[in-house]
Image 1 (tube, rainbow, N blue to C red):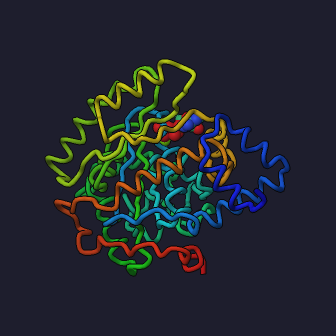
Image 2 (cartoon, rainbow, N blue to C red; image 1 turned 90 degrees about the vertical axis):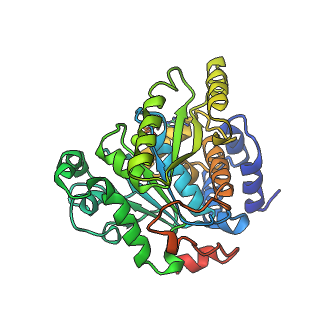
Image 3 (cartoon, rainbow, N blue to C red; image 1 turned 45 degrees about the vertical axis):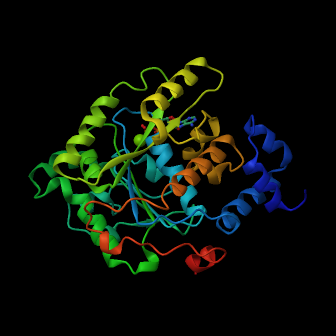
Length: 344
Ligand SMILES: Nc1ncnc2c1ncn2[C@@H]1O[C@H](COP(=O)(O)OP(=O)(O)O)[C@@H](O)[C@H]1O
Ligand SMILES: [Mg+2]
């Protein structure tokens, strides 16, 4: 197999037992680099993901810290974009880890989600490009956001700030520039920021870590989602559960995964994200694992999860209520023309 694209595809398709097995095929740094470049540049041309039947605004929530919310937001976002779908990632955690992993500046003073939530800026004014893909945009979070929970208390319609901002943003974009996906990364709490994200989203994706106490606190999150559905956002539903940090060497991981599947059935994506050191290294380089080490198991599993997420989005039920109902149909992805059209 000499064609790098071919080798890449098979490396992505293969179920590697370790990240080093793909590295063995590409043992020189230049070959690895070429592999990554091929992967980044041609993913959409090879096998684009299907576009959703309407814009999907997905809130990635779990009030537990360290379960993989940020990692999943970043890597699903990059996967969707690399495979042809315009994606907007909104960082709603004052720590700004999503912004870091997407290589987006988030020092104090950078136009950020804070300016749209608490200030008068539109989302369009605080959207930044990312290095991962021209199809992936990011609204970063600066540390200013830490004060937003308190500052928002006195703001009119405070729970609806993010939803309004997203609706206005989408309405004002020409159809061909509208995102197919909006992913919102929540902070590890159930405060006003997460509430804004739950009101803004049409669906919730809950990452669950395959560890002890994985289900602890989940009841509280589900109750909150129910309350939001009853009072603020009737269209909201939990549509996806993603199992993260699965360690195949432990019985515990299997037990947790079984338990979660028993509880949530088909909501759980078949793809499981393994614990993989490349996933945790990537943010240190301002990257997703897909661009940092595309052949790693972390990368291939996030691509798989994103593909399953996208496939479930092709025939979604219409929203009960949406300010975006009239603009919901994002144009389909044109095979083979996506990357050139976007990057020009
Ligand atoms: N699949 C994985 N394999 C290894 N480390 C991971 C994986 N997913 C997340 N991590 C690491 O675990 C930590 C917590 O993940 P993060 O996505 O920041 O969680 P959250 O946003 O829910 O707090 C981070 O240091 C991250 O790099
Ligand atoms: Mg996080």
